[in-house]
Length: 202
Image (cartoon, rainbow, N blue to C red; front, side, top):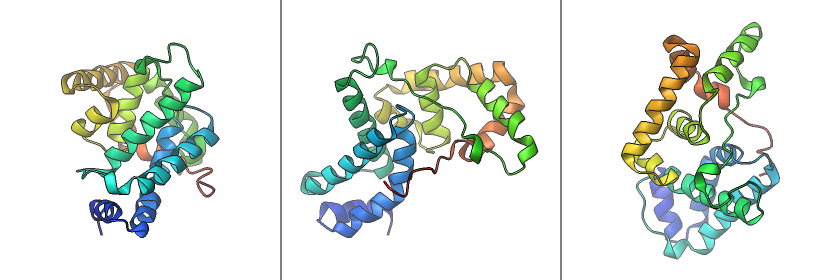
C-alpha cells in the first residue's frame, strides 16, 4: 500500500494504517523538528501528540495529495506553537524568527574517515551566511525531497518568494565554496544530515 492508501485507510478508522504512517514518517518528522529546537523531548512529545490527534480526529481528516507534506506542515505548526507559548525566542509572533538549525552530523558524514573533517568544513562553509528560512527551504527541498508546491504550503510562503529564496541561497552557497562543491554537497546531502539518535524511544 502507498502512503495515500494508508491515509485513506486511517480516515476510515483503520489503526494499522496510523501505525504504518508513523513508522514511515516518524524519523523525518523528528529530524525536521530538531532543526527548530535542541529540546529533543519537546520534539518527541510534539510528534507523539500529532499522531494521537490524527487518530482522535481521523473522521474529520481531509484527502491529501502528499501525506509527507501534510505531516511536515503539521509538526512545524505544532512545534512553533509550543515554542511561542513557552517564549523560547525573541519576537515569537514572527515566523521568520524561527531558529532553524542546519548543521551536519559529524558521526554520519562520509564513509572514509580521513575525508570527514574537510567535507564537514565545506558543508559548514557552504551554509554560512544563509538565513534561517533559506536553510529550511534547502533542507526541505534536498533532504525531504519535496517540490516547490509542497514547500510553499509547509512554509506558508508564495511560490515566487520561495523560488527567490532558493535562488539566493544557492547563489550564496556558490559564492562561499564554488559550483562544484555545492553540487557535491547536494549529491551527499542525505548522508550529511541523516540523524538517527534517539529514535527508538520515540
